[in-house]
Amino acid sequence: MNTTETELLTYDEFNRLHGDEKLIDLVNGRVVRYPMPHAEHGYVAANASVIISTFVRANGLGRGFACDTFIRTKIDPPSCRGADFCFVSYAKIPKEPRLPQGPIVVAPELVVEVRSPTDRPGAVNEKVDEYLAAGIGVVVVIDPETESLAVHRKDELPVRMHNGDELTLPDVLPGFAVKVSEFFR
Image 1 (cartoon, rainbow, N blue to C red):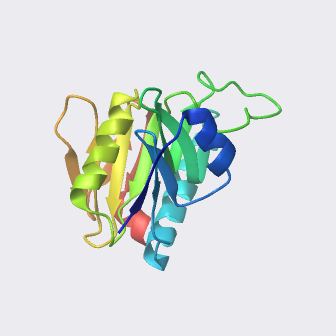
Image 2 (spheres, rainbow, N blue to C red):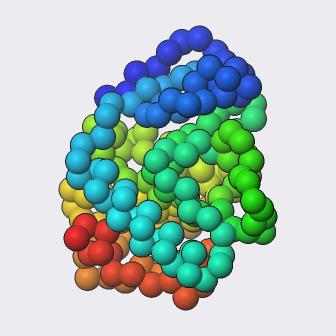
């Protein structure tokens, strides 16, 4: 279950006061705190990060970000979400010696969220909708309980996949392919 604090914050206030915290989002100006994820959540999120980041690095496409990296999703009212994993191409954040400080303020090409046992379906759908409205190309929601995932794109029905299926993301990661079962091994 998540808890919401009632005080409204601006994006800058949130970044200053809570920028180093984990298990927290800014949703329409309000701080939302989440419970600590279970081992299975962390394991599946780590697998997704390794699988996708390895492909991204090997192909020089950009950078993978993990561990609830903050992404600014709305300016007014301000919202900033922590993604389990996201991919941002070098076209959006150029390959430089240093990354910009603070949250990611451009829309990543890809966000991966791992569903926790405490996640309410409506809350997950709201987060997916917010990511897509922010311009994120693809949102993959992985469900460890059912060993399945759903691929979301704006103005399309989600594509559901199970253990025997192969995930490809040609619009954001050309050439990428992985069996869905690899996220749970």
